[in-house]
Image (cartoon, rainbow, N blue to C red; front, side):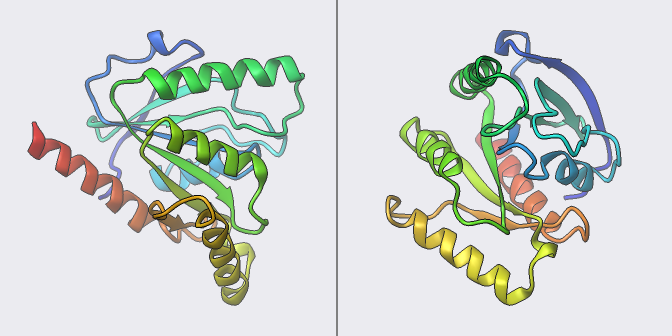
Length: 202
């Protein structure tokens, strides 16, 4: 799939104010500073569609973008460390979880994790929460260009091993780099495959 158009629609903290739930929706979320905005900009081939920042916690709202006039890409606030108060972080967590649990057309949650790091507790806890609540998700490993091929392979293998301690079957995963564009074709192809299967059901 090629993204031909990507347009900002709305930002808010209330799932009830999100666009009418008539199109497939894919939510991108991860720990603060995981490279989410950079990845979204790379996928859409737009440098400034999602705001990037060196300061963790830049994204503070539910941001909807309409892609190819057919599906929504949703940029969610990061979880984990951010330079804001604990009360504000909890507030973000509450409205993000409310959105995930009650958004009828949410098709898949894309959980971004930094490929350079050991499995982080906030990531594992969030993934477990998605599983408990029966939310479809995939894992996107970011910043793959920062590691050698051997380092990357070891990092991914370690992550899979950690997940298999509690999961019988691993979710789909994609290895990406916002710098080189690696992984974009596979990830967008996956979304396109889901969209096509939804069309057949309807």
